[in-house]
Every structure is written in C-alpha cells, then in structure tokens.
Length: 168
Image 1 (cartoon, one colour):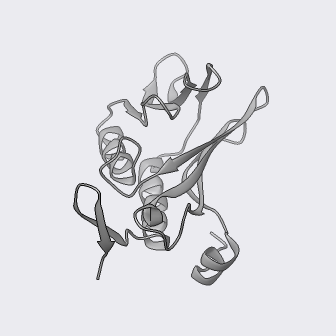
Image 2 (tube, rainbow, N blue to C red):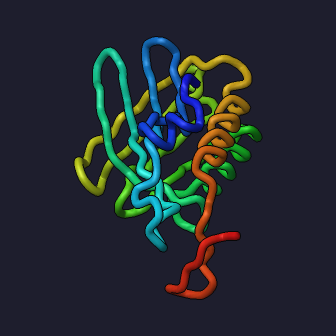
C-alpha cells in the first residue's frame, strides 16, 4: 500500500477501497480521509472519489461514504462483495446524489467481470468497463475494505435520532 498509519492521518495519504484494473481499463474508489475529523456527527463521514481510466475515457467524481446504515456505506460494499462471490451482479450506491456503481461478476458479451458507472444526478454520463481480472479479485477487494476500516474506524455512535456521542 505504501502508506503507514501516521502518514494516512497526518498527510492525507489516500487508500483504495476498490481498485479493479486489467492494464487497459481501471476503476477505483479512493478514500483520502475523513470529511470533518473531530466534529460530531460528521466525524465518520469519509471523503471518497470514483476514478475511471481507459484508453478512451478518464473521469473523476467526488462522493461521501459512511461506515454503516446509509445507502452508500462500507457495510453495503461488504454485502456487495458477498453477492459477487456467489456469482450475482450488484448495484452499490444507487441513490439520487451518487453515481450508481453496478458490478457484474461475469459479463457474457466480454467474458469478463465488468463495471458500469452511471452518474445520472450530476453529469448524465455512463461508463461501461469490461475488466479482465485474475481469480481471487473479490478476496483482494475484501482486503482493501479491511484497510479502509482499519485506517478510519467508526468512532461515533448515534444514541437516538439526531443525538451522537463518541464511542468508548
């Protein structure tokens, strides 16, 4: 990874939550860090960015991630990985504010896994990336998820609607 815990917190070293690449096409969700560290209730809100690179198109889109309990959260990504591991296709982050990220465990036309990102809310742009990935790619994504959770653990507890406190 190249980032130690000190550099992540003090210099803003970004960590990949998702990185899928076959040399020609690349899809990433990168997490640079917390949006508002030390501020309840937004301390656990993570800044993130979707990065798409190919020989034809390059794109970047900012987004936000929560540890859990929201449409675009780390728990949702964990469940998506579980579904992909059983051969099902998934849609993660499909809401009115974020791009819809659809992953196909196997696209029959291209005979590979594929990612489809559709940004209806801002740009109305859609990108489809077939990716020739090696076996074990899902397990590698689980390791990236664990790294993000380790670097930015959930430290805020919602005790009742609109009421937050620090976890002990």
